[in-house]
Length: 615
Image 1 (cartoon, rainbow, N blue to C red):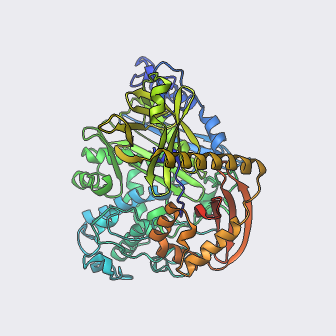
Image 2: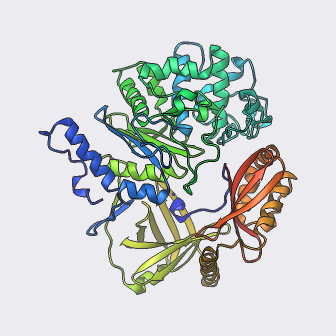
Image 3: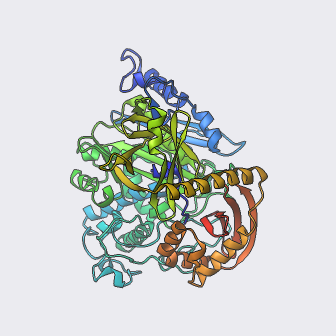
């Protein structure tokens, strides 16, 4: 669970083979040979997010990228024309261990949710559950507590599956092998040894979209009460076995006879997760162990079920309902994207030391699955997915093509200034040689290149920045466009812009020096300890935080209080390192868990950014 206020410019702004996009190898070659050619093209060049016409794009091999991101192993499966065209493992299951193969199993994290949703929809199809009835009418062992925020509206299964039930708890850290594992009822009530807050309704059901793993835990209890079967057996019999997912299980912890086939989880630093894979009693939200090829079989089943060609689990009608996007562009367990003519369904997953992603198109039967055994593996999965999209000519996920135009320095200088994104958060625009440079508060700078009048783009991410002029022809604001979303920023006056630019330069220089010295900032550990104590007491010192951090803390105060109460007293604090952005990294051991923290202090001693995650 992260609670940082720090934002990256890449998040806010959240190869060589271009001539081959959309082309197929010679049809005279055997299928296996064509598949191997495409496989080699995918892994030999992971293309950048943006390719500028006329420039030779950078090219990173899969092996190089795995080394850069400290990802020991990855498994990839590619679907083409409704069939698995190729699947392959790369790297190792653990340092010094065996090679990743097609049968190596990984924790799937939140990718557990869409398959669990399919199991629930199967019960709806059989008449044992209702999508639109009050779940309390069928819950027996536990009930959704009444909440004033619900405004008298009941929670339904449809809302649980679409993340619109208004329920709390985003995700779950799991339990180390040496920790006690709570029952599902204890998780629902936030009772020890559960390490997450109670799952409750915090907004009116159906009123808005808000991702909630907690809602899926309620759904797990609903399935247990309705079927009287353990969830691993229920989903095996109704989903996994009918699809042919023979190397998948929701058993938690993983049975001993399957552990020899399992990958070992790793931190983003390259160190193994202490104690190994975590246990997740929240099975519907995070409990799936699987392979890339098994998940590809799931994708194919959904595609064919939608077409009425293979309805092993769901009927065509209920599959259509599952893939109908609602609030937040989510269906029943799946994120829906793409154009109305060529939609795709997808889901990502993050568990302790495991990260993955899958994408599949509804109509033309293409898709891919990428599973990794490292924190930060999602970055690798996105890179691999982009390479696959380029090679197979997908309408989405591929590298963006940009055309750079040259703009005189005197014209570029008109855009130089500071633009306010949010209270305490700015993008500064500076001139560097023949191009602009943008920098978000507290983050690294990023080069920007012109592609037309008042329009610029970074090469590191697929985004566009457009400067807006007022009636007098002067730049008055900046609009950031990415993923179909626009974010407007107001230009500040010259004096304010100068002050912010000087602060930004000073912070950048200080971060570089601190990264070189690798010494913690004076007061950093004390600030973390005090922040935790203040939150537990329900009295955070907002005036000692940046505006962004203060806003996040206000929003999440109830949940943070519960998290720290469950963790108990601090046992030890250990300084680990200084990151490139100047953040001090600490490991903190509590009575009931361990966490990693990152903190950046402003020159006046206030907390600029602060975030933590379980270990």
